[in-house]
Image 1 (tube, one colour):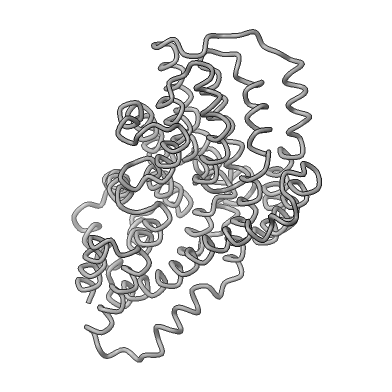
Image 2 (image 1 turned 90 degrees about the horizontal axis):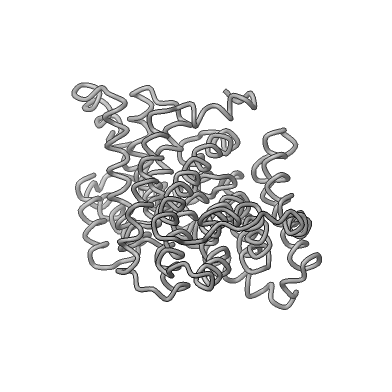
Length: 426
């Protein structure tokens, strides 16, 4: 039954069938092959998948991300980050990474980060003498932090898939996300020094004060979202609602970036994304249920514990598997498919659920920049007008730096578990 599921699924993918329908075909073929299950089970699983209050946070954060990515929030954040670090060697590259770090704490999505920050930073970096390919690569790789820094939609998905508390995952993702950003800034500095990009300039305190004042309402967003969650003022779902209302007022009333007549179009675009994610979650529930009744996670756990009872060995293989999956699937899709298989094995090997979740997400996040599916790579290519094949060479050192950061996340659990412990969550 399991073999039929995977053969039909991967065969459908090779025929260019969309992932959600390929997974649905695989599940349908497996159930027809088995032939003894009642027909009411599948509809029950489909409905149960999305009948979850915590999942309400996903459409609300997507709506919020659509709002902030279309307004001037990205421009204001970029101006502030440039004032903070733009005076150093390779300053605009550092500002690009820092802006993505801030924007990741607002939008929770790597693609929205690339579009919002890249539309401002890539043209500015090109104007200041940075190669277009270098500007695109810095933008694409730094947006990966959006998958880890809360409020990350992928963290919410992992919480739903495994029953891990979302607030604990949000706390666990902060330091690893920053660690990836620091690794990118190191490579950007080395590259800038080697090739003479972004000569040092004088620090401008007046400009920093001005840009801080302009971006202050935006900077309050992550403070409201995370502060409210970590202090227990509201749940993650309630924080998503607060963020959406705040973002709506910020973009329509305070900054006046978006007119009320534009809202139906923006909401329609967000609903397309929401619909595709919810459909995938519903089908993934059936997929996970089939794996459970076939005892795939239990059998895999028993095999690994008997033959390779090493957390280090398992962690390396998870990273390699995630890198391979990222070449063919989006991170969210790969997360939904791999988590029901890998999570029980990780728990049997003694991983902390927060540590393993952040490790898996950080490894899968690299799929945003690995061709042929890398979504942020395609957005960066479009914004910079540089073909994908010309981005591969400058991408390599940044990708290596991110892999090193992921290895650090794998083998230094304190990077993941310290912040949750500080907030009394462990």
